[in-house]
Every structure is written in C-alpha cells, then in structure tokens.
Image 1: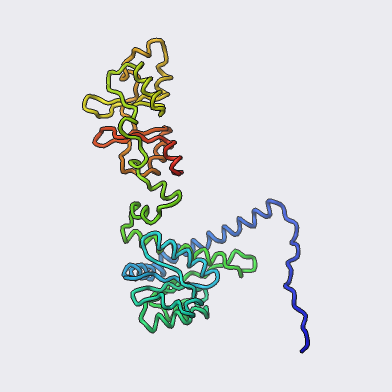
Image 2: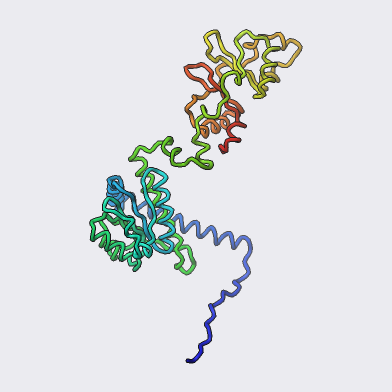
Length: 340
C-alpha cells in the first residue's frame, strides 16, 4: 500500500492593508445590501408573496399539534431561531434536524403537526426523508425557499417563495442576505400568528419567567410598598410633620390625601427646595405640594412604570385604585428587580 501525503488546507494570505474607514465601509456595504434584501422581501409580501403568507398563517393557526421546523446548514440555524420565536409567542414549535429525523427522530412528528422546512435552493438532499414522510402521512408542509419550482417547493402545500437577493459576501457565496430574509420571514410569521391568537403580555410573562423580559412584565403591585410603608399625610398637615414622614420613609416624597383618602398632591425634594425659608415648618402641606400627582394603576407593567418615570423625570410614583393610594413604587425598586 502506497502512503499518500496528507493535503494541506489552503491558507488565506494577508489581505491588503486597509484603513479604519475602509473597514467600516465594508461593514456598511454589508448592512446596505442586507437592507436591500429586506426591502425586496417587503415588496414581495406586499405583492405576489402575500396570498401564500396568509395561507401559511392560516395553516399554522389550524395546527392542533406542533410546528416542526427543519433545515440544514445556515438554514438550520435560522430554523432553530424561528422555532424558538414561535414557541415563545404562543405557537408550540420545536426544531428537528433532518439528518436526525432520518435516524429515528421522524417519530417526533405526528399527523397533527405541521412541518416548516427551510432550504434556499429547495434541493437540500437531507430534507428528502422528512419531506417524503410528511407526504406519506398527509402532514402539512410549508416551504421557505427561493425556488418555488424546486423539489421542496413541489412537495409543499404552501410555498413561501423568497425573492432572489445578492449576498453581501464579495464572492456572493456565504449566506448573509439570504439568511437575513429567511429570519425576517420567520419573525413575520410569528408576529402575524401572535396577533391572530390575541397573544397578550400576560401570556408572554407566563412563557418568560426568567431574565430581563420577565422583570419588565412584573406588575407594579408585585413591587410596590404598601400600607404603613407608604409616606402619606392628610391635607392640612404642617410641613414640620411632613418632613419627618419623608425622612422616615426615605423615598424623597410624601403623598397628600383629602378627607376621603383620595390622593390630591405630592411633596418632593424639588417642592422643598422651592419653598425653603424660615416659615416652611409651619406651612400647611397643601401650600407646598404639587397637585394632581402622576399616578399608576397596580396592574400596570413594571416596564411601563420605568418608562413613565423616565419620561416625566421622576423617581417615585404612587399606585392608586379608585383615586386612593394603595402603594408606592420607587425607581430603585424597579432597578433592583432587574427592570431596565
């Protein structure tokens, strides 16, 4: 037996020296080509692709089981993300690798499911067994491909034919723009589906119990200070007592209520600075307070509370029900809870 020397992989030689401006220009060109591809996809959705897109959404809505997403290579990576987005927005889905499907994972697919297959060329050999399986057992098949006349396109019940786009790779080879519009179309399906399902932020919270998203979806009621932890004084209280209440609670403010317990004002550090003087301590609180304070309802989202604080440039908000304060939430409470 004659020994053969191992071949060496071709090494990439050093390219021409480029300035920072040249490097940034190359990146910008890639982004611009990607935007061009997205505009082409938008135009297709607004035209010839529209009816097929609507049919795909209707098919997915009618699915009693799961959406089975599959693809190979870059299409597979995009498919994994699409499956994750669908699952997290109310459409049960998971990714099945076509090669694994050919070695037993076809058993994960049932007649109640719908297959969503991605292949830019539509001729990915590894999809053959999965495609044949879906045809054999009448499992609906939706194809995302650039070639409607391909093997995958001909086998599909619904074909989402992507527009032909140029890759941002200078050799027009590496999947860049093509991957981008595959992902964008997957996101478009997910968003259309969640709108059709009436998917709410409350449902989103159930499916996202961890991380920053979960923190933003907490309600103000879950984070507020209630009862005696609230700095509240009745109308007519002298400022000497109001200052004590503000100092005790350390929120930098105090709410003012009328005889019926309705909040009518707030005293903040800013109000104190504006009225600072020898007569302040004996002044009734209503002469110092800011009337009609900004308030929030207890079932509002924590993220909404933080946005309101940032917009109004305040650090605390009283939480009210029927005009009566039931709690107070401070910006530190939101930040500590991970709301950003």
